[in-house]
Length: 151
Image (cartoon, rainbow, N blue to C red; front, side, top):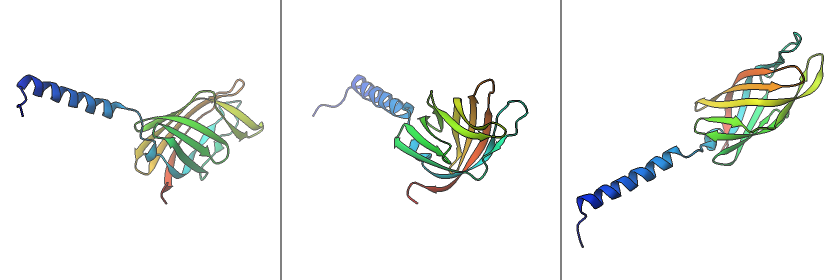
């Protein structure tokens, strides 16, 4: 068997490093989000001094159809699809959640941006922006893990 020449060894090392870099840069990681969570936070309608909708204590269930996507059930208000990239997930476009807004009743709020970010093994921060008529609801909160997919 012939020994590898220095040039061949460099080529093998380069290919191995390139493959490793590609593997590290691929999107995914949905499994870390999967489980049952409790939400703490509110949605502020930002409309005619209407009070915020408190969502504290609401149950959230997160499932993952594959390693790059999430399906989030926010206490029956909505089922939203997210794209995962490492430790954060962003809602896909064209989706809405229906919240019971004080003085207005149930309202479908179009999601303009919703980001979930893992800040620990058992904590996710949530940042929400939406729109409805002339109002631009916003919300932020924290999800605390109650159980994972295996529990």
